[in-house]
Length: 134
Image (cartoon, rainbow, N blue to C red; front, side):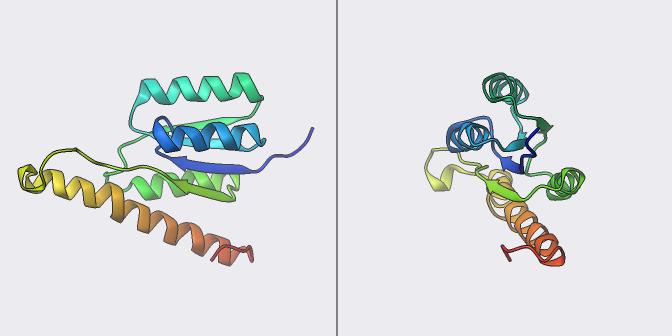
């Protein structure tokens, strides 16, 4: 049996993340799928397993959570994941001044803080393993 590489896709159940999920599954990558939408996450995981015969791990988490990046890293390390795709994005289409401080904080957490911390930790792991990507 051919050994496939693992990739983590944050925001994997919708939009661009879903497209990356299907693309990488089609290329034979096993996938760690991360999304806050449990139903959509389960559907895309079943679809790519059925269509491409790959393995999947699913993480139904809110990427605005304080430890979301750590949860992702724990799973990355468990399967020796070699690729990270961060497509998660928080947005609400309405006039900027109609957003309250709490919604702006969520935007920062999902779109910046978690992404930055996850990419930094992932790159550190790559460097420690002597792999390219740092």
